[in-house]
Image (cartoon, rainbow, N blue to C red):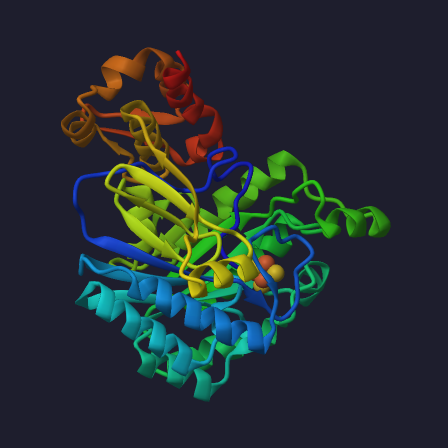
Amino acid sequence: MARRSSRLLTPQGRSPQPGVIQSTVLGVYIHVPFCSAICNYCNFNRGLFDAALKARYVRALREEIRRVTDGAPADTIFFGGGTPSLLEPAEIRELIEACRGAFTLGRHAEITLEANPETVTAERLEGFRAAGVNRLSYGVQSFRDDELARLSRLHSATRARDAFALARAAGFDNISLDLMMWLPQQSVADWLGSVDALIALGPDHASLYLLEIYPNAPLRDEMARGRWSVAPDDDAAEMYLEAMARLDAAGYQQYEISNVARPGRESRHNMKYWTDQEWLGFGCGAHSTRDGVRWKNVSSTADYIDAVTGGGHVITEVRRLSPEERLEEALFTELRLAAGIDVERIRRRYGVDVWARFGKDLQVFLEQGLLVYDGARVLLTRRGMLLANEIMTVFLSSTVR
Ligand code: SF4
């Protein structure tokens, strides 16, 4: 289920991985690449569940985490995938314990588990909670069974509601739900029906993503065969704006282009990606950013296990970002936040006055009501968020010049 990207709502062709930084409290990401079935739109790093492979993978993860020896402070752990809720609670516990051994983990660390509704039971949820997980992120995607079937998801809307209730009963007071909009055959009313259903459940956090159908996705063929289409662009804009308006009215605060939360329930882990902080990723295909260097682990699950258990290197790409690249990434990601870019912070960290350098190119967006600059912050209006990718190219071109 992992994070979706979208044409409108994420920087083009980029995952949210900002630049680097002075010493900070780390985030820890643990990738779990197993799924019960492969969804027809998915291009994440995942494969079909295999119990024996999973057991070897968890052992490799523990070993990779154990190799971290500097005891650096960390205050978030995020199990992403894939479908991390396919792991046993005892395995999640072992991995959290490995993190406690490798890092100085704060007492109030946020520990998130991505979960698919069909994978949970009361017993498993209680096990995850007892293991130390204190935040759940459910990949719901839709509260309409016809839409879920078109996406080849394994759960129904009823199963999603049940999974939510089970999580509350197990004591989870920090639950996020993901929804996807602009689905094949989805009308504005269909979409808003799902948004209202989410609001009725009352999660603590919600992520709304546009479905992006990548070139070789099986869903493309299914859409052609079924003559399914997506709503016009103008409808997609209405879907986004009206959904956000309803979430506002229900007491949620938008803090990022695609994310809303009850006060204090923002994803502390994802905020690290969006506020120019550092994190370490474990598992196949995981990215890390620390001390000005970015690296990526080998993508294949089998190669990853072999590399770790054979005592070899799991890192495939290492790159030191230039100061210009760090600045660009910081601007890209901070503009995604509702609070926008903190001009003084950028000046202190990068020695650049954002408005002096980019104001001339940003002025046109200001005049169109897509951007606000109040002397302290540069931020997108909600209409501007729909065109974030275009506006961000102003920062991109600066490093090319
Ligand atoms: S649950 Fe579906 S969308 Fe999520 S990672 Fe697995 S295959 Fe991809």
